[in-house]
Amino acid sequence: MSIVVGVIGTHQTVSGVLQQGHSVPGVTLLPLPYASEQEAPDLLAAERHRLHAVLYAGPIPYAINRAHGHWGVPATYVPFTGSAFLKGLLAAERAGMDLGRLSIDTLSPAAVTETYTDLGLDCQGVHVLEYVPGMRAKDLVEFHYRHWAGGTACGGLTFLKTAYDELAALGVPVVRQTAAPGAIRAALRMARTMGESAVFRHKNIAVGILHLHGMGELSLRHDWEYGFQEAKLRVHEALLEFSRRISASLVPLGPDQYAFYTTRGAVEEQLQAGLELPDLAHLLDRRFRGVRLGLGFGHTVHQAEKHARSALLRAGEHGDNCSFLVTEDGAVTGPLGPGPSSPAAEAHREELAQACGLSVATLNRIRALAARNGTPILTVADLARELSLSRRSAQRIVTSLTQGGAARPAGRRRPAGRGRPQVTYELLL
Image (cartoon, rainbow, N blue to C red; front, side, top):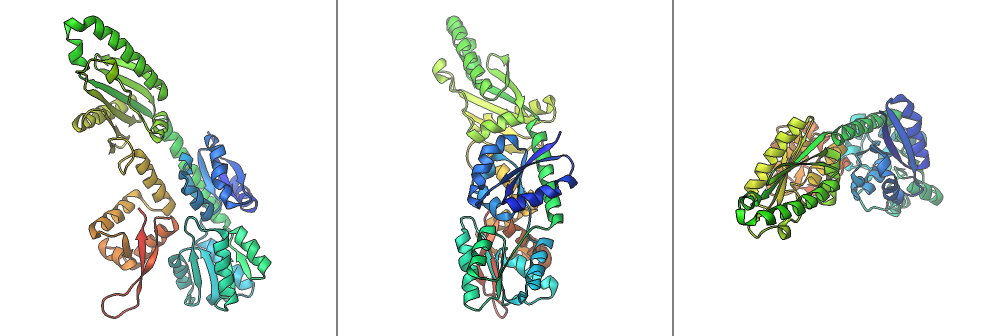
């Protein structure tokens, strides 16, 4: 099976990705070029049902679409750090620019400082404007033009084609950053892996066990035998409609329990839309207490049923008219609905980890650190000290967080005693 990956970017950057596509087998690329970065969400919305994954040709369209949730499609982007940033600096040097007096957009100050330090270059005279969601091409143009016109920069390095075109028209010396072929191939492999994982999860087995609390007691009432059978028929019809919504097969397990058999993908679509339990109270006697639903995902029917039973126990402990979910790895979420314990939040956490190039476990450790400290603000030194890391490792993690949109510079903190002020970062977890 070939994984269909949508490629979103300018005509030039999309073409660059397509040229590298032959080197990554098992992938079918669907070009989705735009004239303006703001078109990216509409492009994805129109084609999302055809895609297994999305590859953005840079971090800016990725950040724009991330605000729209990527429409439930796994997404990644071609990074402009590492060899791609070195390529841009080399182009600036060949254009006669002083690398110590550049204006650079999109990248985080930490990423620029790290690269300059590795090259043995002084970055004290380099001006950096990190991209944040909502920033426009106009903001980037004003940033570069202000430093060039004011004499604080000899030229600019931009990642945005729109900004490049406007700056060139204004006569500002500017180099446009483009992705390195190796970075494109690595991003394509990542998109393929994400698409394969999504397809695999989508086809996993899902079992739901619905318990009608109080229904068993009603079935024992001999004075209500005809009424019970009539109500049971109406309940069965309502549950058939519920099973149709989740594309499931309905199997009665007794007078007060039903099982649903479907796929994980069908259930997740309903969870994203807001899963509503069937309202059965008006069909039954007032002694009927409510509905409890346990959902289980598994690689086999047996595993999914086991997890559904476990989820049903959790729902029973919580109360009536609620549902819980147990996934393939035994993780429990619930009661299902909006909030930090919802599957949508878990999916966002996984997406954020992928965007940062970190594990979910690492993000959880950092989130726990912020909770212990009672503030989302930290420095590289804080992270190194609290998580027992080397300063270099902590710096790389902070750089990954900022590039992935999980943190942003918040200012500077003067340490106690002597020493240079430290850059502080706000966690966006």
